[in-house]
Each structure stands twice: as C-alpha cells, then as structure tokens.
Length: 116
Image (spheres, rainbow, N blue to C red):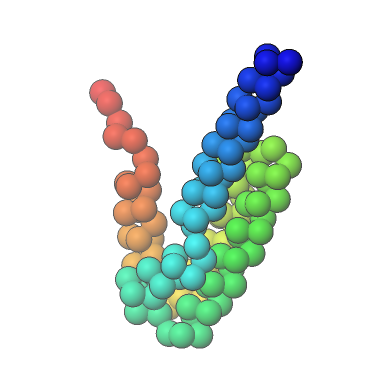
C-alpha cells in the first residue's frame, strides 16, 4: 500500500511539472504582445496591427492542435511560414524590409551560436 501511495505521489508531481512547463510555453507567445512588438519596430497602423493579431491568434490555435496531436516543433514550420506570408501581405515594401530584419534578430536570439 505504501508503494502505491509513493507511485501515485510521483505521478502527481510529474503531471504537475508537465502542466507548469506547458503553461510557461503557452505564455511565451502571446499574439497581442508579438503584434505590439512589430507595431513598434515597423511603425504599423492600428489596422495592420489588428490583422497581424488575428494571424497570430490563428497560428496559436494551429500550434495547439499540433501539440495536442503529439507533434513536435518541426511540425509548426508550415504554419509559421504561412503566417509570415500573410503578415508580409499587409506590410508596405519598407515595412517588409524591417520585418526581415526583425525576423533575423529573433532568430539570432533563439539559435545557438555555431561552433567551428
């Protein structure tokens, strides 16, 4: 009986840790926050920002579906690429240049440094 309680306790702890890590991952990408970053960086109009918020919200739903189905980060790329295309469609040519710079800066923050 004591072993059963220990196993149950360990399972509860692991489940709690999993839920906490998943909640933190979800909070890392907030559509409104990401769109506001772009609005500041690219001087977007409110109309452009609202469209981008919608695109990001749809992306979050798609990413949640992939995660729920057991997919990994690689499965997100088609959805992320499609969202980037939609965003570029609402930007001016000058803003598109700034958007590419913004994306490169974001990649630089998340990609590990290359070793020779």
